[in-house]
Structure formats: C-alpha cells, structure tokens
Length: 128
Image: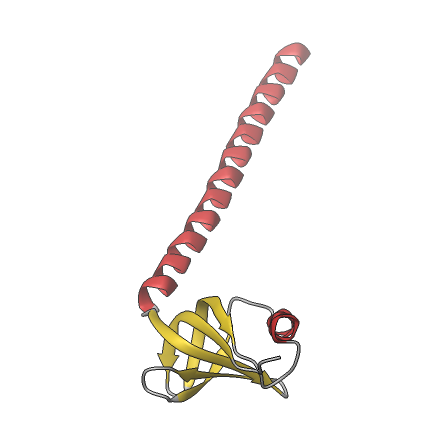
C-alpha cells in the first residue's frame, strides 16, 4: 500500500512539474511575442522619412539642417545612448559645431526629428 501511494505521489508530482514547465514556456513565448507585436506597432505608427542635410552638435544640443527646405530641427535619438551619440559626433568631427553631412531616417514631430537610423556621408571642414 505504501509503494502504491509513493507511485501515485511521484506520478502526480511529475504531471504537476510538466504542467508548470509548459506553462512557464508558454508564458515566456507570449512575452516574446508581445514584445515583437509592440515593436511592430511602434514601427508601423512611426512614419519614417529620409532627410538629407547637416547634423551639428554643440553644448549638449543635436541639431539638423535640412538641405531641401533649409529648416532646422532638434535631433533626438530614442534608440541610442545620448552620451555615445555625442562621443561619436566628436570622434568624427573632432570639435563641436562642425557640420556633418548625413542622411537621416526618422519621424518629424513639431520641431524635433526622432532619428531611427542615420548614415554619415561627408564631413564639412576648412581646407588645409
């Protein structure tokens, strides 16, 4: 009789363990799927446009001057570390307020351009 109870207890424990493990895997899979869906919704709602112009950084401010309209906008890098972006600008231009020609993919809202991606095309400078 004792062996029978041990077998039943072992069998129930095994079923419970299997159920909780599957539940945990399903929950983890749902969290991953939710993140993917959320990222897709954010990307779909984000109307990306390409802008060509000059990126200028100085005194903690990132600015962009559009080549076609000559309008100026504040730059924000929502997917990047602000200190790393400033360090990148300074490592390329070697000084503040030095125009760097680039192509920016982003979303314009009011006077701010949210940068999704960018490509540095040319660094303006004084002739040597």
